[in-house]
Image 1 (tube, rainbow, N blue to C red):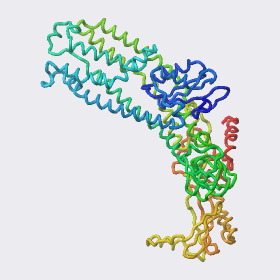
Image 2 (image 1 turned 60 degrees about the horizontal axis):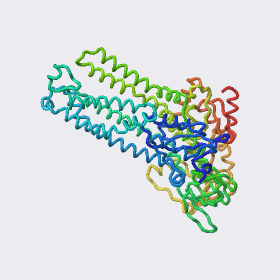
Image 3 (image 1 turned 120 degrees about the horizontal axis):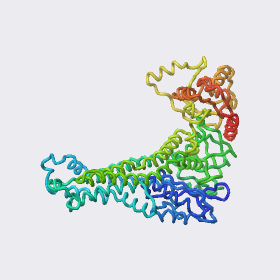
Image 4 (image 1 turned 180 degrees about the vertical axis):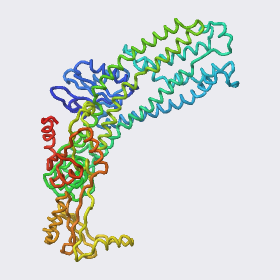
Length: 627
């Protein structure tokens, strides 16, 4: 497979190619900074960014100068792993591999934390007893602490020491450096005090004591608490992918491919542009395409938020992840794989989560120079305490404060807080139907002057509800139906049922022909609706959809269906107005429906009957007006 044709690539302007590399083995934000720094300095790379929270590197490079293999070698040369290669990329989704890696990391951290916790608790009890508990005050107590803490250092803390060595090898310092120096200082000092106390304690009074002071509990508690933080951090990283996982789950795994007269069930990855596919009622559409034969209605709410199914006829476009509601149809695939509209939305969310806001880049710079500064301050602290403390306690005081400065000043949260906030924000936005372009857009949100809302699914619930039911005078009144329900009487089920695309439904109930649909259906079936024309007009003016009911060719009543306003919509819009923001509604729905909703919500600026492709130009028009 050539680099350019690899599914992980999308072209960017000029000659640069974008590559997303999922990376394993990163333990903190400093790891991400190190990889980013090395990738940025690589020949042919125009820009590089590494997001620790999503475990992904995004690189733009010139393919005539470098390639995937060279960039992979840069990452692996630093001691990290690239989870996807050209051979595995088509077989397993990158997102799944990252999820598997994160789950394995979480389980490993959980085991290490539990081991550290179990072994550290007795050490803490011994240290906090200060010799006041008789059965803990024996000559070999230091050796017991050494026995308990050593596995914590070797097994539970090995990742910190490995990270510190890796940083040293690359002539840098990070959080692992601080943790390793702090815990090793406390552990090695305590080890010497335990096995060779004369090397450390020179004061005769201290030598006369039964036990020399040790700091095993400091080393073990530090590692345990840092592991707890890493464990919580790992769980947070897993949850950041839930929004993308939900979007990916909208696409079906298989499709029905037509080969002549034969139907073949294939995986969605096997569908090619130009293939003829069959979709039955109730099935999800596998890829984007254009209808060749058949008519139907399609639920496109996952893309547009429109609550009512959209009528589809030959030459109309259909989209992956949407649901076929009524008819059977055949269509030709026009976009497959990562080119479908659904996958473009997924990619947009991934890019937004992987982007860095300006404040995040500032945090990276600060945390990058923070570690060397902390090391310098810790060293000065050690020297000052060692110089000015009493002879018998100078080493103890100097070491104690040296370790305290190293551990308290760990800058990991500085490099993690901002990207985590961006990921949670963009992820929650995607779950609620709000796609945020990138981290910078999220950060600049406080400068907004105008907010433009879509109507269906944003301000309204996005599902049709029956709001009115008027019965003809010579038919059963609504009260009779209500009484029947009260007495738990069962209604007859339709014996025959058929849907007429774009018009309504026809059914046989107790031998009678029942029609429920719009004016077109009534005209087709030659049912007079003059008696309810005024009511239908009133419903339309209120933004409601009118449906007529006929039994055996006679009009029985009229129904009104409307999308309800979300319960929280009014309060949210009121809060936004109190912030001084101008509110605008931009919808593809008809003018009457749009104005009806806007009047209830107090929105003054309304643009209705705007096609999807026209909405961007309308936004630009508002921007040109300084909004």
